[in-house]
Image (cartoon, rainbow, N blue to C red):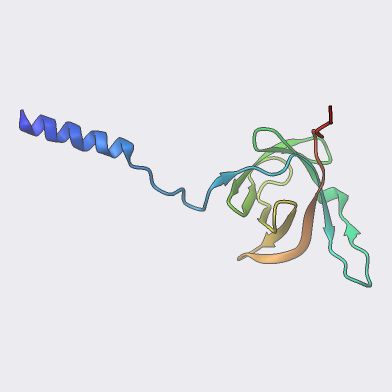
Length: 125
């Protein structure tokens, strides 16, 4: 009888332990348009890349310029587009409004995507 009680207590304690999520906290992107570009500087204007831009929508999803829906996974500051037109693209967040695309072993590609517009604007009174 003691053995059954010990097994039961052990199994219950397993169910209450929570570990950290590998890769960081599960998060989502700001909803709305994300405009991708090659950044400029004080003397050169950014070069728009509309073919790489997308719209972030509900349920950790995005819509490509062709209208194809895909999904993404955001763990802390790491974003991976997991399905759809841009499956496999990876980014690192630079705040909540800018993402920098990564290639290979976490090297920046030179492309950034900027949150350009929200879907829902708060209205007063």
